Length: 411
Ligand code: KG4
Image (tube, rainbow, N blue to C red; front, side, top):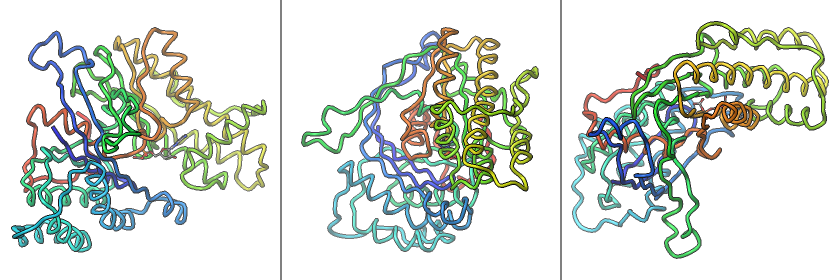
């Protein structure tokens, strides 16, 4: 099955073409409890356009601006992913596009329509079996561009659509066991990377940490989720970004904080102050990061902060966040008898967090599943992958009623 994944929930425009076979043993209760290597994945095309440079210039993501960028980037990303896959063929002969329907579907995205129509007119319908598009959670104006784009392509090519929850995309992405392609250097360059599904046994937990979300999710069987903990205020990535701004570091702040923290650790620079570990010992799995952020504000307000102090703050802040996330995840592992923990979302690129979680889980005999850093931030592949699993179960959405939901939950 070939699935085209479309991601526009925040500031990354991702389009990817996944070729996959294999399935969970849904028919057999025994096998359903075990994921395995019965899957084969080929990444045929993967195109991503990030707005980080714009974010840097303006100090954050602005929905209206991000929406315009998605509208501008979607067709080039589609062309790139399909081009890499070698599934685009020039069209000769009559054009049979249903223009009024396309115009209606994209009436709110005139710029996208202006690019998509000539693209569709130029190419034959490619051999793809399903579209997968992020419908939430995320920035609603951005999500809508992707949703309307998917509806338009679905109408033009007559392909079914799977509505994907972005958070499930992060979860399944970390289940993928990537192998570098042996064929990268030979003629079959369009088959870039292979993968299978990691071997693990349910129940599993997923710690999802990104700029917009912080959740601890329990999964007792494939594609079933229960959110057992979430942030009561800021998301972890948001806290990283806000603390970075207080330290006058560029956007996005997460990688900057982690760079300074690393410098502090390697030069043995310790903080002579302690930041709080919010909710670490409370009897639930929710999180709170706004108090931690305020504690940093108290340290820096109305002061000139030296470079060394910035490094100390970065190190202590990263330690505090890691202590809370790792501590609570380990308690949840024990409570729910989880056999593996998935770490997903943009903040999972944080090396300190990864190694702390890995070290502590190993000591408990529990496995950590993470994806390579280049796939831990938002991308089209994770959406295609989640879409594939739902397409196997024929869980397709009706294009006419498909809608975006900025606060979509994972349950
Ligand atoms: O998942 P993501 O790409 O976008 C969404 O929020 O959906 O996550 C972006 C977040 C940003 O807040 C960024 O600062 C943070 O991930 N981030 C990091 C690191 N790399 C990215 N935070 C801490 N350490 C990092 N190395």
